[in-house]
Amino acid sequence: MKLSEYQKDAFLAWMYAERYVNDGSPSGFTHYGSVDPEYCPGGNEGSFGLPVYAMGREEVTAIGNPSAMWQDLGIHDAGGSVPFPIHPAVLLDLKNHEALRRNEAVKVVGAIPTASVRTVAVRNNDGASFWKLHFPRTIGRFVRDLPLYKWLASIDTSREIVELLSSAPKCMAVLPVIGGVFLEGGAGIAGFGAIQRSAIPYPEKQGAAFMIPCFSLWSKDRTRNGDATMLRQLISKYDYTALQAIESFVGPILRSYRYLAVECGMIPEYNAQNVLFEIQPDSGLIRVVHRDMCDVFKDSAARPLARKRVHPLATYHTTGDGDYGDLFARRSFAYDFKLSQYVLDPMVNEIADCCGHVVGELKEDVKRMAHDIVAWPADYFESSCTGYCYPRKGDVGRNSYEVLEVVDYR
Image (cartoon, rainbow, N blue to C red; front, side, top):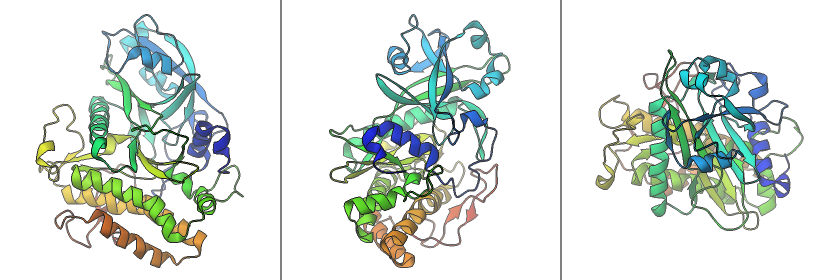
């Protein structure tokens, strides 16, 4: 993919990168699961038809403005009802729910699959937004359903992080949740929801900028394999040395990660899919943009006293209160495994190769940078050399941690 594609249509270029400039997860499970080819991001179709149901306000729980949701979907407000998009791949699994039998899809809109498969982009003349959809089938290693506890956790965590951004480093932003709908279970079908996410980073910034998924920085274009990686093109465009590239791309990640983990008592999952880079074309100024906050953990032990509040509706993904006993394992999992192996390793390798730098020496530079920027509290990890990961197999969870052989970036 050529960086110049962003000059034509920045959003479509972002979607192309989502779909075709992606080498897949280091877990090896990227292409594992039950997803029909027409709904896969790497397929040939530009979009697929997404059915949208008009639900009575008494039938669903909704947050946000239903009229704005209809508008974002490119549909006129259907008589004061609430829009409920359902992924067509699982529609047959859900068709016996009473509410779906009572209502019909009022329209089928064009949806662009993103890298996560079940999150789709909908674009019309008024702009674009993303919808994270209920998908009670396996994608990668996990079933991607959206029951109430995950729905609530996503909304609550997004809201809290948006609040925290007023004091956050300027290099940090999010794609916030702006709407959501939830349907209670019925006819033997468990309750499920859908979540609407903004396509505009918050806080909003003035001026042109473009978005590159983190994994697209070092991945090869699946359809045009001869193009240089996006990271190489950016290094060439801004004439970066290896250390300048590290400061530009790794520095904002570490600063935003530290803010959430150390100052706010949250454990972000900064994997290559959840992190985007917003780049201002003239200056090269970068913000790290976090999306899909369902897997952010609330770290009760690290929370400042002012934020030690109860989350009665969103206790999902909380640690530090003795529940799972995985406080140190989860902290290390997020930093030493997800961030370090899924983001920092491939980024450092690509920068080193592009700039003719020795990989091991550049890793040491990043380690020193992390030490200076993050300044981990002495009791944050179990020990200075103990780390945790998940094994490379399906059906893993908080009881599946394994010890990491190497901890590279502390």
